[in-house]
Each structure stands twice: as structure tokens, then as C-alpha cells.
View 1 (cartoon, one colour):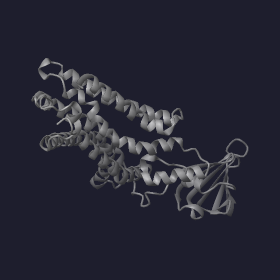
View 2 (tube, helix red, strand yellow):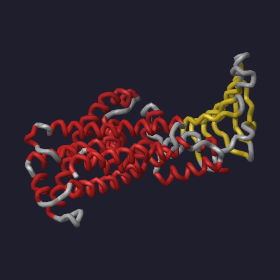
View 3 (cartoon, helix red, strand yellow):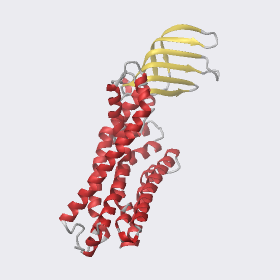
View 4 (tube, helix red, strand yellow):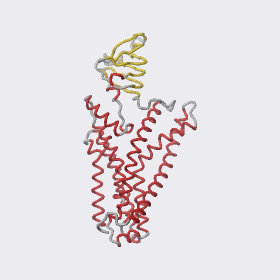
Length: 364
């Protein structure tokens, strides 16, 4: 048995099945409770829009639930690990496995395999479903839960600086030379204060300038409004400044975010914060693989010694310390204090070493 990581197919299947069932049960309970609480807090906003009713509430649930699942899946894996190992320990099944010659790593091997499968499913779920749900929900919230925007991929409410002026577009459509802006407002601040406000239903790129149709100008000092017709503004403002102005890593798939980062670099824009989000799309789902190691202390030791609860608390503390460290790393990456790779992967490898040290020191 010592020469194989999976010495018994029966034990492997039994432990992995128990772990997956308990993890899914915990996840279902967490999502049910948290979704209910979230709906109680947000239902007033959804129903505040005239005409909204039960159908819109279910739409909100369908968009919010994937976010809750993605956020709390690692917690569920941690709690599933603790419950599974505590049950095996209390029933003396861990003692039987170790008496048969299995090491601590062999006892945990089925959990690692199951957790790896959960990580793969989590990445696919986040990439295909959560990113789209997040993008749609954000746009719906900006519309104050009115009619659901049809083009969920179009950036909305984008602000770009043009010298001392500010340009706002309610929505941005197209890419490159085909970029056009919907409902454009230009705040002219040539004197250091707000001099005039120029509005137009749309603007299209024309070489190095933007052409506004049916533009109107409001003079702040005089309080008068005048028609400008067709004008050209924004000399030197590039289309990618609008299309890449508001990139939220949570709203992008891994492939699309990778492409946006390349475009930002080509445009000479900073990408450190977004790169941290890109790598966290990999390290985040892989945190499920780390949970069996951090919660392993709950599965060993003599159950009747009275220290099983303390071991469970220690395993939970290690798991929650990882989540704190992970959020701290992302925050430091956003501030530019950590490089993107360190911000995303540093906590993972740090707690991997901590978990291995605790397991080897106490059980091996």
C-alpha cells in the first residue's frame, strides 16, 4: 500500500463520494440562506421600477445565484473537508486506514482528486456563466432594474479625459475604426471651471477626431442653449480609450480578458490591476484543491481525546486565514504594491507550504 497513492479503489471511491456529497450539501445550504438574505435586501430596488414583479425577481435570482455559488464554493469545500474528516475520525475509519499502512497523504488523496475536479468545474462555471451573469447584472443595476439591456457586452457610462475636458458616453458600441458612442456629453472646462456642456445623440470616430451629429451647447455662464449641428471634437482621443476604459475582470472570461490586456498594453495603458484579476481566475478555483490540505488536521488524532473540536477549529482557522490572505494579496495588487503574479499566486503557495508543514509535522 505504501507504494501507491491510491492503494484501494473502494476506499478512494468511498472517501471521495462522502466528500463531494457533504461539499454540495453545504454549498446548497449556504446559497439558499445567502440568496434569501440578498433577495430580501434587494427586492425593494427591483420592484421599485414600475411594472416589475415576480418575473423580474426570478431574473435577479438567476443572475445573482451564480455569483454566490462562485464566491462560497471554496468555503463549502473547506467545510465539506472538515465534516468528512471529522466523521471518518469519529468512526475510527482513519485509524483503520492508518493501521492498514496508509500515510496521511494517502488518506487525503481521494479528497485531492475530488477537489481537483471541483476546481475544473469551478473554473468552467466562472468563465462561462458567472462572468456573463455579472456583466448583465451590473448593466441591469445601472439601468435601475428597468428593461434588461440587450447588448450586455457593450461598455456603459464611460468617462474619458480630453485635456481639461471630460467626455461621457452612455454606451459604447463597436471596436476600432467602427467605434461609435451613444448619448454623448462633453463637459468643457477650458477656464478651469465648467464653461459649457455639449450634448449629442451619438458620436463616430473620424480619423483622429470624433464627429458629433445634432449637437447642442449649453453655456453655463449665460444660461443659454444653442444648436451646433455637426461638429468635430476630441482630437487625439483614441477609440480604445472608450472600449477599454472600464474593464472589470469579474465580467470577462479568461480569454477575453487576456485579449483586453494585450490591447491595453498596445495602447500604452497600465494593466497591473487587471493582470492580477486574470491570474486570480486560475488561482481562485484552484483554492478548492488547497482546502483538503488546510482542513486535514481535523481528520487525525484520537477522537476520544477531546481534542477533535480543537483540531476542527484549527483547520477552519487555516482555511479562513487563506481567504483573508487571498483578499489582502488582491488588494495589494490593485494598489500596485504587489506584482500581479505575486498578488494572485502568493497566498496559494504560502498556504500550500503551511498546510504541508502542519501535516508532515503532526502526522507524517
